[in-house]
Image 1 (cartoon, helix red, strand yellow):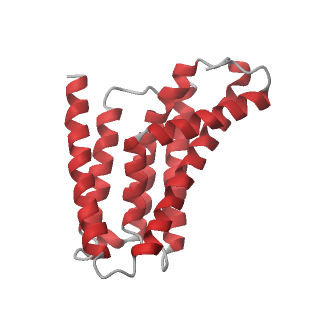
Image 2 (spheres, one colour):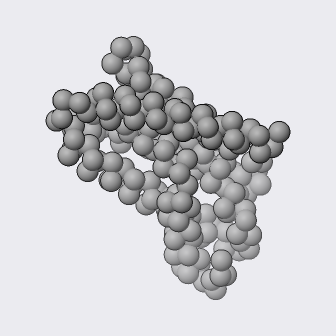
Length: 199
């Protein structure tokens, strides 16, 4: 990517990079959908806000730490991201039959913990950009803002789908249940594919 001269240019450039990164990352999109799929948005918007905030805090911490070189981004991160999708989707499958899967505390723990893993994945784009230390704070801020904008766009798009379909009698079965099954299958494929990539 071009090397902007000023901090403001760097900020804008990396906002764009963050949006592009989340928009082109099918696994990150799938995880955000998993987080919101099991939430009844009309009644539980506070749960949505808390859950997404926990995910944001988690991935922001490791994104910054890995970009600054405080922690590494090991090879297991990509399979772990795929596993995070499978686990979160599986929890949605049991939301109506296993009461503890509806716990807000569990949702926060899942979002924050897996956010830490996803942040390590996000950091790869920052490390590849090889930003000069003098403008790194601007780049980090911009990239994180771009990721959040992309994330909010995904949630906004999902909200439109939810409010269009949630009154349909088959919503829970066809959208939540079967959608979660599809996400478990897809993420399991990614998991084993990525395991093979560094075996």
